[in-house]
Image 1 (cartoon, rainbow, N blue to C red):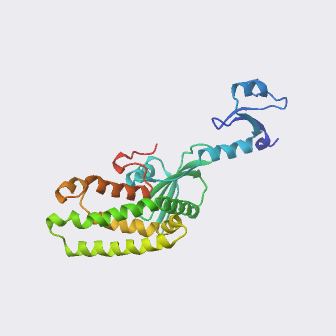
Image 2 (tube, rainbow, N blue to C red):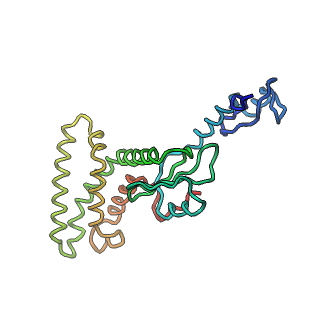
Image 3 (cartoon, rainbow, N blue to C red):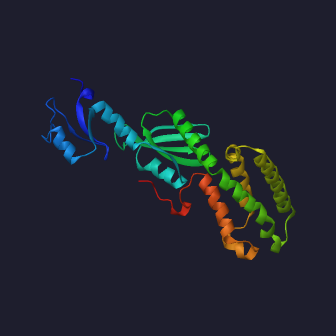
Amino acid sequence: MNRLNTRVAWDDATATAIDEITPDDRGLYTKKSVDELRQQYPNLTVITWDEAGQRTDDHHRKPPERITRAQFLYWLEVLPPVDWIRIGDGESFKISERIAGNITRIVVRYEREYWTLQDHIRMPHEDIIVLVSEARLRVMREHAPALFTALRDAVAILPDAWRKFGKPEDIAKMASKHATRIAQLDEQLNASDNRDELLRNEAEQLLDTLRELRAALPDPEFAAQSGVSREKIESIGAAIRAAEGWKTKESEVKPVL
């Protein structure tokens, strides 16, 4: 008999196979009827082992999320890596111990960023990089409006941030250049029937520009000395981190166990 076609009692609430179902509709181990099992597990359905395996995999899949370099190295060293591949700007490996079924943790370096996801242990490296690339772009596009707001703030406070120390000529030129770009983008937005889509298409450029401006601003702890709002500088940094896929401050990130 093909075991993949053997029936099992599956609980959708916990994504767990409760028991194997015999031909007389009773649990092989619990000895309970399907109706009795359903009283104990209201979300119970009877499916094949093959279907149960697919549902187990689907339940444990997780999309890409950002991690730190320290986390990347932690997972590289905690167990022998499986299928460790480095091609160009992409690198990935899988944890040898599976989470459930065919699903394991996959750890990725994409350019200078580090990501993790949970998916099939045999997923090809090329498909992994595509998933991470798509997730990266999707997050940036979702945060495009916030990036544009933060970009306005950065350009507005940049000259004042250095006024007490004498305004360097290169800082003035930077602020002027990006103020002009903001004005141009404002014109395009006002003429567009879909402002959000236009901003989403500009997301990557907005993020690169905001990173450049943030690097030119003082650190938040020196905000008072420079005469600008600490909260404003921190909000600009927060907008960058959110668009980069961070869900928490880097200092609070711990190994994903």
